Length: 395
Ligand code: ADP
Image (cartoon, rainbow, N blue to C red; front, top):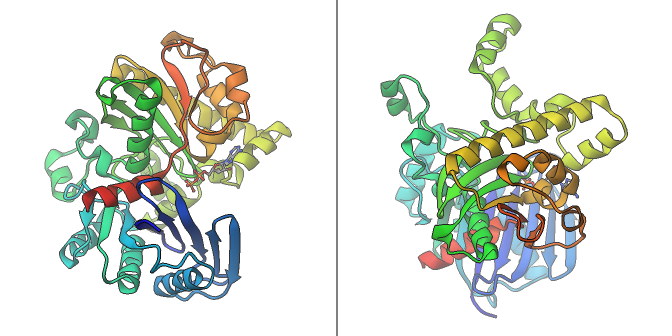
């Protein structure tokens, strides 16, 4: 076997991992460990086409990593033969300190820990995964790839919140952006598909997964993105509502007696599709809407409206648009949503070819009519591959 990179995405109660050949992009194995520290722990490990599932209590992330290691030993591929050259870690918040992929030394880890104040829900579980993986793989470099990295040089006009400048500076209040690995990868692939030099391509990327964000990328540089200081801003998402008047929060504090913890829970877990319909899954939402469910229809319209508003704004920011790109679970699969988002945007030259859009074809593709500008594309995202390649390139 040739050298591989093990990519780890460690969340609060789950760890996703993937063993990737960074040169060919081939996936040697992947797995998902869920419900860590809860009841009903579970690991699903896929080696080649075969999935092995084991249900067992998983006390913490260290036990989770040990379980994954066991799977590699029992089901394969054998990790000693796979030549793990590096472990790549998704780290959500790099603050202003980190943007390029960085080898995780004790000092770097301490810095990332300090940045947890900016991302209390994400950086701590990322670091728990790092610690567990370093214990299991002490002899290879561990590399942090930051979700904020691609947006580190957002123009100041886009990155600044118009509040008391000194307060903002002191507390790190500015727009950082997230999903950067995906926006970087997908916008680069879009230029490739357009047959243009990346420096010559202006694109809008709509990353629509459970979390969702938009970006405007001019010549390979991100000039706008919808997520801000935290992943709460911007588009309507599975459990987050995106843009909201901050006055709503003060109103709810005064009128509904909600404190910071309650507001945090509302904005992170009880908003978006979940808040409006009781379910966060987009496919279920569309099925319910088609069956005539009023709440689902309404939420769908809110979701579409927000996207159209962002496309208009980002087209204005870019000045010239070469491609609108859909990616992630919803963007790659929901043809009807893509059609509804683009319908009526002829003012920008945007149009969908119904046959291309509805085709069962997967992979990178045009869904606009032949020769139309801007193009409308579907580009499957691959954050794990991008992380593997970033880690590999650093070494
Ligand atoms: P995550 O942000 O968790 O990585 P994904 O990018 O996998 O999420 O996207 C998950 C979302 O994609 C879910 O809301 C799911 O319903 C939606 N989705 C997946 N397949 C389809 C489909 N065929 N049609 C509509 N939505 C889909």
